[in-house]
Image 1: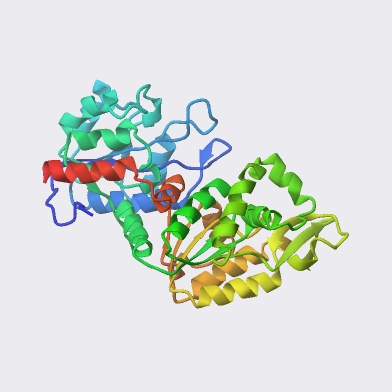
Image 2: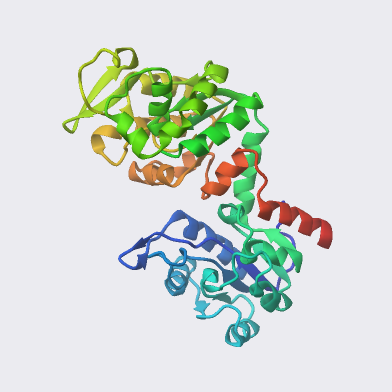
Length: 397
């Protein structure tokens, strides 16, 4: 990947597109891994004495989290240890004047780009207004690379563009797993469509050794195998996951040898944890919901993980927010952390669970900051922003 490393950017105007989008609690943004990671990129560039302007978005129009980036500037200042100037504009003369007045090493954050009416057009007005002011554009987030928005891809048509540190690290991690064979996956959580998309791509390419499943995905696959999942059938219906039943059966029929299902599961019966072997599901009379994988499954999955060279994990094994049903998620994450494998982990709940259980992120190969973009990349889809970066390099040399 082409980065600004090795290029003298002293006194140059650099435009950085980051992803500072943050969770909101009582109207205040929460500190999160993305903003911490981008703060490091911002500091690194500022320390090289360029004139740095940062673009980002927050929320969507009509949503509660659609707010100004003024709080983000304060949080970045605290993280970086340098003043981060902020203007409540993006393309007005006031914003342009603030950009022109920047001194070497100074940082300016512009207003939420989604407040612009044409941000979702690849050639929005922001590109025309700001391009003449900058020497270089830096994209620093894989998490937004699937969007053809003006602030993401537009500048790549007009000025030399580069990958920032966060994007560079994300793509390097993906490259490591893409060039590996016999990869072990762990899929949990509730996003069955995303899991199936990645599974099909890797299974059909023959690069998967095993796929371990938990969460809603495991419940659907157990149901597809003809097992009685008790009250969990209502969860599948309510979340329209039964629409995926034919696809689940097809995957099991074609790749059943590589898809490893739970051998026991944990039921919630009157709030208590009870474990049953999968072979017993059609004969037990207990009525409850499946909220976690069982102890035998944890042991079996952990053995497979410990013998793996490359692991990709996305989503929790169960309802980890409830202490009695957090065992699966906690133990699977610890098994990955303690293995010798290179691991790539993704998904918001995965990151939240790592933090909840106090697992050192340094024990993993890479913990991705991306959501949908990572899934699309692993599904074999091309991301518009990455394609545009490659085209920019050919155009500007």
